[in-house]
Every structure is written in C-alpha cells, then in structure tokens.
Amino acid sequence: MTNDSTLPKNDFLGQPKALFILFFTEMWERFSFYGMKALLIFFLTKYYLFSDDAGNLLIGSYAALVYAMPVVGGFIADRYLGFRKAIVFGGILLVLGHLGMAYEGNATTKTLTGEIIRDEFALQIFYLSLAFIVMGVGFLKANISSLVGELYEEGDKRRDSGFTIFYMGINLGSFLATIICVWLGESYGWSYGFGAAGIGMLLGLITFISGRKLLLGKGESKNQAFLEKRIFGLKNEWLIYTVCSAAAFIVWQMVQSHSVVQNLLIIAGAISFIYIIYYALTQLDKIARERLFALTILIVFTIIFWALFEQAYTSLNLFADRVLDRTIFGHTIPAGQFLSLNSLFIILLAPVFAWFWIKLEKYNPNTAVKFSIALLLVGLGFGSLVFGINISEMGKVGVIWIILLNLLHTCAELCLSPVGLSAVTKLSPVKIVGFMMGVWFLATASSEFIASILANIASVDTSNGEAPDLNLAKQSYLKLFEYLFYTGIGFGVLLLALSKPINKLMHGVDKELNN
Image 1: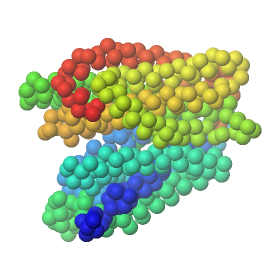
Image 2: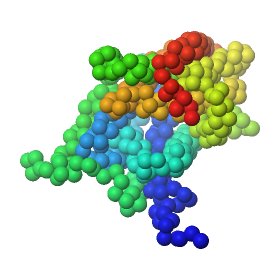
Image 3: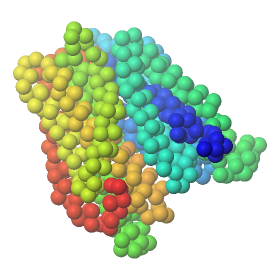
C-alpha cells in the first residue's frame, strides 16, 4: 500500500501547481502581445495613414527592440532582482504599455492637397506605449521560462512535459488573441482591440501575483542584501525599477528612429562575432572551438529563416487584407485572424512532430538538416502564394493558398525552433552559455529588422490604407513572394550541402540533441 505522506503535496495532474500559474500568466502575456501585434500594421496604415514603408520599418524597429531587450532583462534578474520580481515588474510595464495603446486621440485626416494631418500628441503616446511594452517584454519574457525550469530539481523526468504544457499556453494565448483582439479592433474600433490586449495582460499579472505562495520560494533574488542597501535613501531594488522605467523614455526615441536601431544591431552583431572568434581561438580546445563555430553557422541561418517567417505581421497581413478573397460562406474574415492558423497548426502538429522524430530513431535528421528543411518549407510556403496569385487571373487570390502557406510555415517552425535553443545550451562552452543565448536573441532581433526591409519590396501606394488597384497590388506582392521563395529554397539547399561538415564540427553533440 502506498503511503500518502510520500506523495507530493504541491502537485496537480502530476506537475507542480506553480506550473499552471506560470502557464496562465504566459498565456495572458502572449494574448496581449500577439493581439496588439496582429492589429499594429493595420492601425498604422489605416488610422495614422502611414505608408507601407514607414509602417513596416516601425514594426521592424519595435520587434527588433522586443527581441533584444530580454538580454538586459535576463541579466538584471540573474544578477539582482531574481525571476519573480523581474516578472512582476515586467508585467506592470506591459499593462501600462498596452492600456496606453488603447488611447486613439483624434482621427488622422488627409487634406484636399494630399497632406496628412496627424494628432501628434496621440502619436507620441503610442510610441511611448510601445517603449513600455518593449521594456516589459524584456523583463517578463526573459525570465518566466527560466522560472519554469527552477520548478524542477536536476534529473526530474517531468521537466520536458512541463515545458510542453507551458509552451502550449503560449500558443493558446496567441490563438485566442488573433481571434478576439482582431475581431474587436476591426469591428468596434482600435481602442477595443488594444484595450482587450491590455486587460489580458492585467489578468496575467493578477494571476502571477496571486500564485506567489505556490512558487515555494523559487525565483527569488540571490542578492537580497544588495537590493536592501540604500543609495541617497533609496533602496537599490527601487533604484533598479526607477532607472529601468526611465530607460523606457530612451526606447521611446529609439523606436521612432529606424537608422539608430539598425546601427545598434550592426555594431552589436559585429562585436559579438569578433568576440566569438577571439574566444574560440584563445580560450578553447579544438573540439569546443569547432562546436562553437557550428553553433555560429546555425545562428546565421536562423536569421534568414526568421526574416522570411516574420513576414506574417507585415507583408502577409497586408496581403491578406488587400488581395485575399476573405469571404467564406458569405462571411468576411478579418485579415488579422488568419494569423491564428499558425498557433492552431502548432497545437495540432507539435505532438505529431515529436512522435515522428522519435519513430525515425537512427534515421532522425541531424540539426543542420532540420534547419535546412525549415528553410525549404518556408520558401515553399511563399511558393504557394506565387502559384495562387498566378492562377487568380483578374480576381482576388483564393484563401486556400494562405492556409497552405501557414501549414508549411508551421511545419518549418517545428523543424527549427524546438532544437534551436537546445543547440545553444549544448554547443556553447559552459562559461559563455549566457552570452551565446544573448547572441541568439540578438540574431532574432536582427531578423525582425531585416524582415521589415524585405516587406518594403511589396510596398503599395494606398488611399486611406486601402490598395486602389488590385492588379497592381497583386504584382507587388508577387514580386516579393517570388524573391522570398527563391531565398528560402536557395539557402535551404546551401545549408543541406553544408550539413555534413557542420555535423562533423559538433563532435557527437547532435546525437544528444536528437534523442
């Protein structure tokens, strides 16, 4: 007979109860993030009457900063605040940012001479709100996954299934956001869509704070003595909050200057690359050095992948709005709701892919081959739209083609994303794992900016955010999608050709990644 006293008292459905607090916190945070992001390009082009070029570049700068900031937020949490306090601080900044997005101000007008008159006060509130979101994501997103890891002792077999449950929360939040926030924004007004995103984040913050006891002390600061010290009568902890909140005003200016973001990414990328080469040549033995080189090559190819994949929130969103025949059974689907397909396919296909890789056993492709398959699939996704545009003749493009694109892109993501972060932790030398994780995020930030530049290939002259000439718009998107098709296929084939040398550089680590 089992002794009940030996059973874990803090478990629910075989997992720590705190996991489900983090699940719903992350679900609501992703609900707010993706709900806002799904509406963003339409808000810029239809409400503020930004050109496609300006809208794409603004989203590129914002997204680049979002993916770069977790490096800072993660460092401050590790060194000073601890995961729990960093998550609460990030959540507060996110609530402020999302609720600020709900302020529309006066409508933008276009005079008879074509001059656009914008409510500059409302526009600056909008930029400041983006800055708070950037800072908030930096502190929350960087640390909540780490806190999930802290729930499990070393060797706990529940860890992998726990992360699987947690990541399902991410996709559930994204799926609900692109249905609900887009519907509210398109049907009732932008403030309703952005407001719903803000309410979602507030629910996430309340959930996390209310579940503090279930964390059982996990995620607390390892440097509490430093936090308690005072400078000019102010505790260091509050000094950190004050400085980081003030930093949002710097981001406020940066998000409006695409050239500044671009230059920072170039400088940071160059410094990172030089340091990797220096460290590899001076601090590592042959095996460790070659593993680091293999990881660096893979990271370069992920930049290409995500630059293509992240067209979803710019060029593909506008394509769906302007060129796609969105009427199904007499009902017109809002363009942004097609973004929900990615999350839906991930929820449906992730278990299938996990089962498939296991069944392949010794025939399981190595990491470089999986990355090359991802590039080929993302290219084929754009190829489906090229085909759809070419057979549409004079009318709009059938909805089946964007469904096919999302299916192919989701399969591509499942080939690359799950093994990517694992590769960073396994291939990086122990002393610079944190630095290489930062390089991974920096690469993702760079891809977001590159994605916005690529999207401008399909820029369309619009009238109040609408494309007046359907055929001209179709040709613009055809040009972009053909370019992205050849790019994905070309780099996929190149990486496939390099897969054996890269695998050799890994010195057996790849077998661990695939097991």
